[in-house]
Length: 159
Image (tube, rainbow, N blue to C red; front, side, top):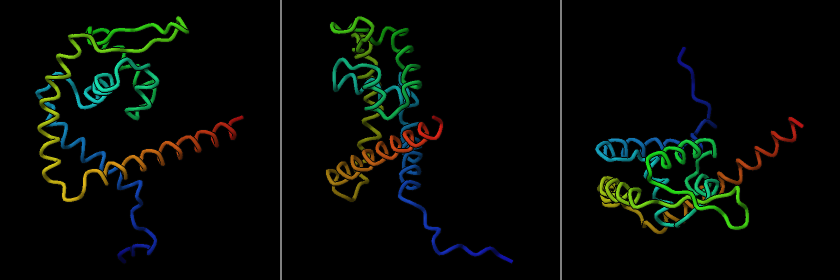
């Protein structure tokens, strides 16, 4: 007997957002293959390029990565000489990262690869890009709020 699909089993918006992330990886993977940076690295470098010196926690939040994952990228950038630490004048233990001249060069080189994929993506869009940007901002805000709520529940359950 063939199983029947329950009436309530439509895929959720969260599932569609997840699948969209996978599609973006499929687009950027080959586009960035000849680049000096991976798509994830390019995202991190782009925040520093756009925002200027940023603490690692700010980078993690802006890119949507866990801080432990971001620490891997920070370490690699520093080892490559692509970023430098700028100590906080208020707290000697805190620092922000800034791209070095070498970091700016590889960001520009990787940007050529990213921009080719981005141009193709934008050409294929059939919906207003500003509307999509607002919708994605709201999706990101909702994901952050839900994650914070779940983390709070887990902390209360563990405590």
